[in-house]
Length: 98
Image 1: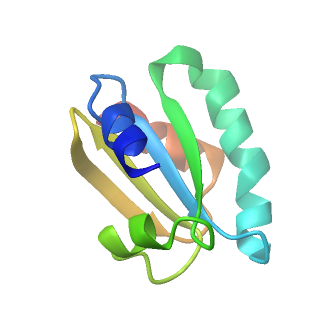
Image 2 (image 1 turned 90 degrees about the vertical axis):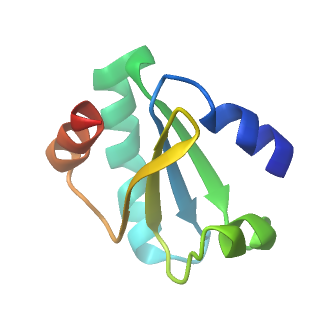
Image 3 (image 1 turned 120 degrees about the horizontal axis):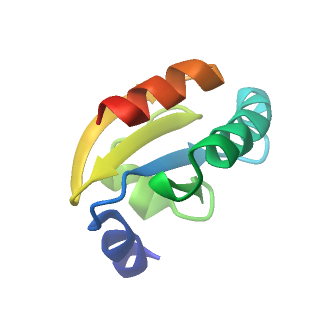
């Protein structure tokens, strides 16, 4: 996953990464919001979900201490990060600003 992950975040298209866990209630609330964001922004953003229980090394690399944690990458660089559930309008605004 790590080498694939690094190739995904290298592009000029912003990549929103959702670090989540199946047992996490707020993560379940965030999932439909991310679907709405993707539906509205279409190909202007990539959204990938990383299960912290299945990818502990990746979670550790980005110092993910709680879920959900969202990271936004562009050109291989982390541009933004926040933990917790955000509303669709907030996420769209953040993505467009980067």
